[in-house]
Amino acid sequence: MLVDSHCHLDYYTPAELPDVLARAADAGVGQMVTIGTTLAQSGTLPALIEGHPNLWCTVGVHPHHAAEAPIPAPEALAERAQHPRVIGIGESGLDYFYDKSPRDVQAENFRAHIRGARLAGVPLCIHARDADDDIVLILKQERDREGGFDFLLHCFSSTRRLAEAALELGGFISFSGILTFPKSREIRDIAADIPLDRLLVETDAPYLSPVPFRGKRNEPARVAHTAAVLAELRGMTPDAMADLTTANFRRLFRKAA
Image (cartoon, rainbow, N blue to C red; front, side, top):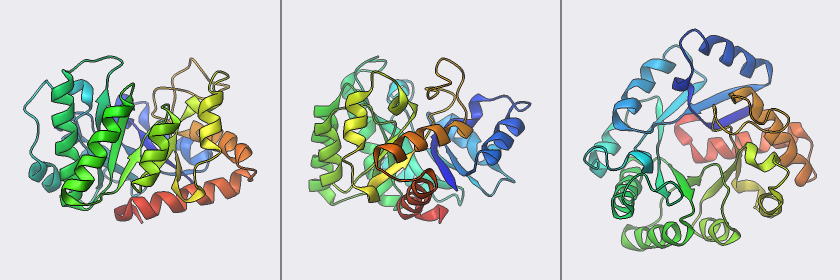
């Protein structure tokens, strides 16, 4: 069984979603996590997945939206994470590529999510784009401030330095369809060196369809293509990679075990 550890199921219409889930099941994708991007949107996700015991969700504020509303208190995030279907906090982090929110606001938002995840005892899903140095700085400062916490660098497309720092801090790393792109040789080189017990896979659907679907709207079924490329990189069968990444998912997202 495969797990799509990061997707956005609320981006599909109610008419589309049953077929999306059916195609995922046919592809061997047994569980999916749909991700929070604002507090208002996060609040709708438990109802969206109601009746689907193989679906989970997170709660959080994406860095693009960090300036749109007051930054949530860590305690408020932790309280929302008490819902039985909420298994993580995020996605939160830093995005200096689009810079849709001021960088100081992004940093404050990121720190609030780290502290909320620590309070709730659930992992944090981290968005990192063109902000590696500040991501590393904040992760280390927050660890030194109150101790370690569980986290996942989602949709990894950053530098080896960020990967190594995350691993040193106990983090996990998830690869998306970017891994399959012809120009992603550096990402594949990094993926080949990540310890096997820290690897996850995802789609970030409806974005970032893997080869051979690049340019088309993505969906959770296609995580199988990313997992197959990752398996080849690591000299494993696709079934063995599915077993490995599913076991890693359950170790990190303990509420979904």
